Image 1 (tube, rainbow over the protein chains, first blue to last red):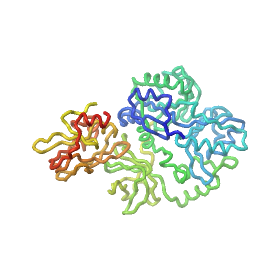
Image 2 (cartoon, rainbow over the protein chains, first blue to last red):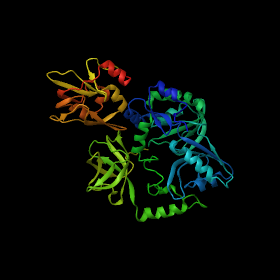
Image 3 (tube, rainbow over the protein chains, first blue to last red):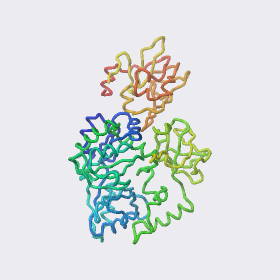
Image 4 (cartoon, helix red, strand yellow):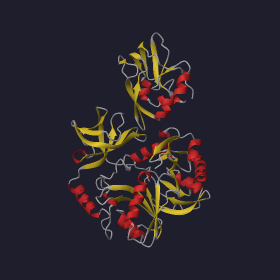
Length: 371
Length: 125
């Protein structure tokens, strides 16, 4: 396997903007263009433009596409209407999470599964293996799409100026084919920032044209290009999990507080059903640890892997932490023992390089947009 | 970006002013500030602390990471910049000016501090 990082179709555009680049799951991606705090705030108050072309698209087609995905994934994929999307997960037989996914139903017999860049190959391999015996085809479409996201309260107005598509009729977690700035695109109302916004799947050869058009149309209302650094603080404030941090193969969706994505009521067997049935019961009766939010009383920032402490004992572990631009304080997500997981739990701190810094336990998310 | 000619530089990306009455000012370079991203928290040595050349004396926290602050010289801290503690973004906006970190009464100085030109070549910017 080559160690040279992969470049997106927008690589030249990022370099022209002077982006600080970073290696992310084998891709050379923009970390930030200027101040990551300014980029974060632009998405909260105006709009931000992201290159997310590292995400892994997998197309599933065929008469049994729905039955196959109902078997391979934990969600009720057959019930997703054409033009709608669903947040779901793919688990191992033992219930461990392989990845979290968004599945778009493009046609009656055609779905697009979007996996995290770091897991795209794993998901592709698992889907391919699980398709045996189904009249359905799994296609690697990672190179078929560039993905641009416009996120923030101004994003509907910006997109409207570039498309005739019925955006008002496009609900959250829906997607429709259309034309944006003269470019054929799948327009999806999805995102990972806690704001209203759109994700635009286009052929890579059109990516730069669309990027320039969005920058130009959005500039008057405060749109700026945004990197992965602010994407991480935006999703953290919104309490959204990140694979490799809040989600791993050693956790089930129930351990992560996301048991709602597992649909036992659907027809037929699915991979992980038995283990997940037990995991659901365990989470209900004797949860080992729970995912909570932590807000700093001081200014030192918790980072993934640091210990959460109470009364001198380790009671949990930080999975994600960052200074929150919106709250103006450091925040974190952590798995903590159930006894300390209630909001307001007394005496909880984080061991930051040997000092126990006081932290408040809060319910997630940290930030919720006004609708 | 240009590194001021009148300063000297360490390979840990700190700058040091020429001593006035035996006291020098210390900060981090613009190159280092850009590499860190938005600085959100600085922990500085306290007045009266002894700092040692090449050893950690504080920390700088940015969105993505925490970095140790190294002292470029040995001596006694005589002032810490309260403005930068209150507003760490000064490290990003004015690393060579309002974003200075502490002042030190120098007792010993390593021989291998770099000139502005040498540091520019060393850091690549």
